Image (cartoon, rainbow, N blue to C red; front, side, top):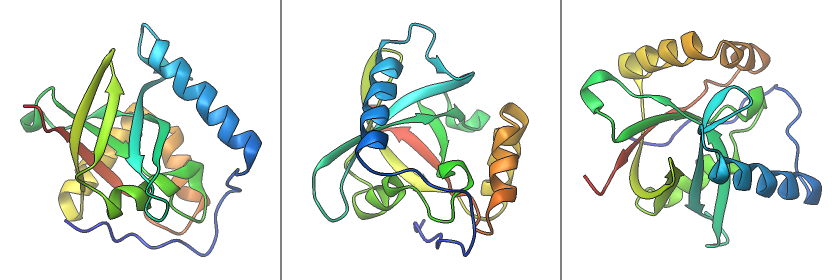
Length: 158
């Protein structure tokens, strides 16, 4: 499926700049070291992508959710929410450009994954699971007029 969610026309402020990049590195380091695998009350993983324009490796801490029953234990859902910002997060475009070069770090393991954006009924069912697990994501959705992309990551090692 295509990575085809456009930016919206309104949304929350999206941080950027050197301070944000530093904080992102600190949070990714914490996610890697976390024994419980949680940060700010959510399951967390470190998502590593290849920059769409730069070609550089980029790592971001991202909340993850259980995928559907049929997906098993080697799949994760992530949401390109950017906390309700007008634009999708940069990592969304990196995945779109290089969906075959994505890896995650979760539970002390580094796992190559295949990324797929969910659409239609499958996306809606996954979205309902996300907001039932983390109601703050429903608040993010109200801040913007773009649809939050829901992405399934499936281990390529399985």
